[in-house]
Length: 146
Image (tube, rainbow, N blue to C red; front, side, top):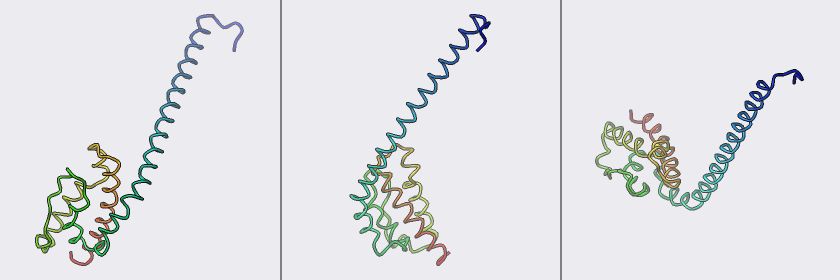
């Protein structure tokens, strides 16, 4: 700091420093808020995993590699208002129909889409589980039938 610094320059420097400090404080506060929200969501997901995990695993048991079985029973585990229309196993005999229904399911249960549409943490958890499981079954289906 220059002792011969003009008063106007000194005031402008102090004003700039205060502005920088205020922006830093605001950014720190926002970061802490985000961390708190993320911690709460993580705790909620953990709780949901204990509560919904066994239900989803029981539903998937025996059909985790079978895309047709998964698609024909999705209505059993999807949330109300998901807009999934029930599909019978008979409708899924043709590989083209399987592909069509798979794509529809992906649109409905993509975790990012569910989050984007304001889905609850429970819906996002279910969507994430189903998305991964269905994608894996789709990969198996593509190797064996397409």
